[in-house]
Amino acid sequence: MLQPHRSDTLLRRGLKLSHLRLLAALAEAEHLTQAAAAIGVTQPAASRLIAEIERIIGAPVHERTGRGIVLTALGRALALRSQRIRLELDDAARDLAEIAGGGVGDVRIGAVSGPALDRVLPALQSERLLHPNVSVEVDVSPSDILCEHLLAGRLDFAVGRLPEGPRAEPLTFLPIATEPVVLIARRGHPLLSRPAPLHAEETLAFDWVMPGPDSLLTRTVIARLQALGLSRPTQRLLTASFLLTIAVLQKSDAIAAVSRASAEQFATGDGAAFDLLPVDLQIEVEPFGLITRERVSLTPASQRLADLILKPAN
Image (cartoon, rainbow, N blue to C red):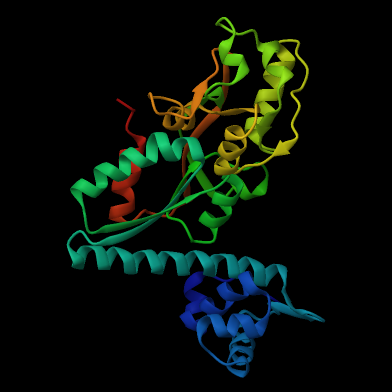
């Protein structure tokens, strides 16, 4: 019968880093051949490692299926711990490389589009001046995708919002600010020739470009329009791509609801192709914030960049 184990007992019984690496790989691949390749061993060697793990803990960690293997509840629990240990070791190696390199480092962050322009870009400019040898990779995606990448160890931290449900549990969230929403259209749009300010219902005569119905932006906009007693806008195109949104606005009379930070990058100045519509719907999307993995310390370079992002905008 399986008995509760203390961590030192598992180590004394022979649990090794190679066992943990295989379990972490199985949690992602759930196919022995792929997991073996991920850690650089043969399939027979991986099978032996599994047998050793099961002997050490005294219970099965996997079950074979027609399409590969499935981790048992016990195996899944140990695999998730193994993933955390692997990520910590990866971060430790990066810490040592940064210290030894004297300011050299790699940072991998994610952000939703508005904060990417409003918060991350200024922080990157400051970091570039202070530490020119630090390389930064930025993933601009919706919050749910960023959180998945963060949990998988592909990002150091993210600037966005926590997803709903169980996936939010291993993550910590530090609020930064709410995100005001404005409407934009191409320069020369018929609405821009009308007296300002516009009435909200005037905008509903045109197509709106927004993300899908499940996105936070769309849900917030629809709720605000309903609170004003207005109908839903016509949406012939639903997309989370800001570039596609801009392309559609350029070639049509559609309008788009976007974050103010995004709008100010493309709809200000004499040479801008877009304008902010003079209508204030008083829409703010719930606060975005700094998202990190629970109980995981950032590398020095990542922490510096996170601190810059957290500073209030001037």
